[in-house]
Length: 57
Image (tube, rainbow, N blue to C red; front, side, top):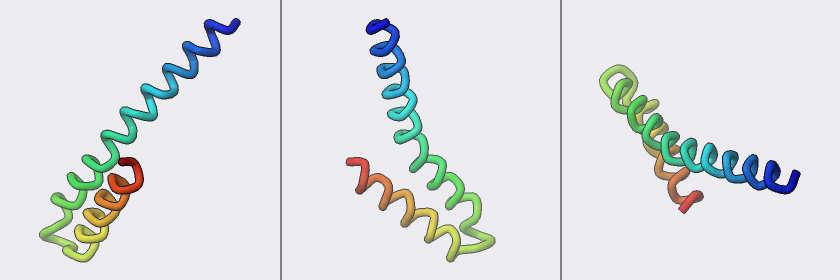
């Protein structure tokens, strides 16, 4: 039972790490995609990605 707990905890930590790494990249990709159509929205997405990295690191 204790082993299962640690396996779940480890798997959750890995999933959280993957999400943390991919979220800023997704935000930047969306910013690039919308830069020509809506520059203000693109700037907001870039700021969000940078702010997220500042909090996580």
